[in-house]
Image 1 (cartoon, rainbow, N blue to C red):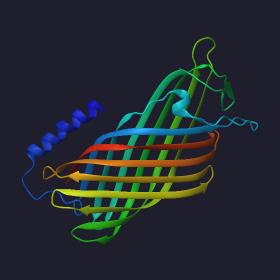
Image 2: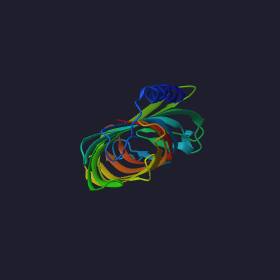
Image 3: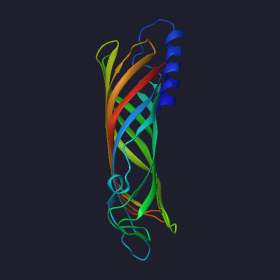
Image 4: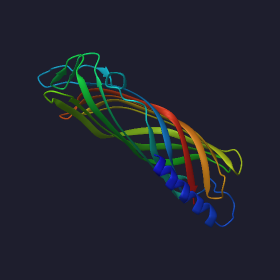
Length: 267
């Protein structure tokens, strides 16, 4: 993440130095906006993966049982305002974690059982991407309130491997677009400060998924330069899914929340 933030700082310095003095970018009328920054994650994951022939897997806390730690990740958000009241928005970030430890309890994962005390080397990769459309149904020169409809694509891969002696490994993965509906609001406090908030929710029951998504986001931005600003915010995301698929048959509860520190460029 340090490399990304250093590169971003250079880009921001160039934009600020080369920009022509003008009115500060207005989040209620700008055409393009891109924000890049760090996402300080606290993650809580519970998973159960069943085997074939009706064999039930063990539901366990991934962070506690496998020894994963919280992580800091790079994140990108952007939108294109193609009409005064209409936007297309994208978001992307991923987390890749690995750990090695002796498990405290027996775990059955797919068709493999790992006894308590087994040394396990594990990796857990998660990617979240969003494409959304926004329509501002309330709008004036100080604020706007928009309805959103979009797709969250959640992908994860969990791999478990024994350490020492005879190697035993197993894995599970899931990938699928899940729809969301929500509201987003922007309130311009002054020419240099504005707040941005969003709530998204959806409950779904479409083969092979059955579950729900919750997404909450709030931030405040200081428009330090005419086209470049600095922001801090908070985001929480919860998904609860029952999946019946060849690569993953079981249950997943994945929650992350944490602070965002970012830079935003608007045009």
